[in-house]
Image 1: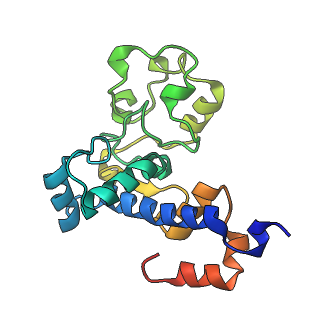
Image 2: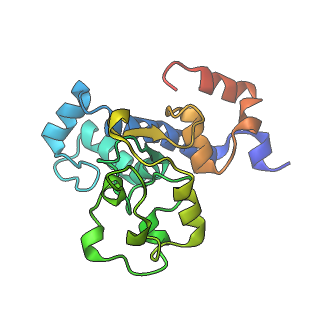
Length: 202
């Protein structure tokens, strides 16, 4: 029997630790008004996971660890388009695809388009302005856009949600499943994993 089936193993222990850090990073991303987020931003800058300097301390150790998992936090972050004013049409993940439109584009996207929101590509009648982008995007992605309701002002502000979770809320279990490439069903059957998932902090 392999080590994976005999016990947790060092690799999976590391993944569990990373899953906790991913969840912490997600909270940092969405809880702008939380005191600890404001303290971190004031002390280490608005993007503390991109540039980390200073003497070694407990705070910096945590930040360095979170820096390693930050790409996974961004990979799990999804946008629910409401008024379309916040979501970047090309760079953000707002369609079912695991790739953004910029990386999936069939042609070079004009520079002047790169910073445009989803709302920019909507007419006054709340319809997609297909002529502005359809020649740049593969058919599979165009079908995803066609199945997405255009943004409307009355829907309120765009919202971030956690894509790997069916509820849209970040959990240690969903973060682990994303990192491990697993549905988590096998782990959920084991007493050890059930205890981990039921821990209040998960």
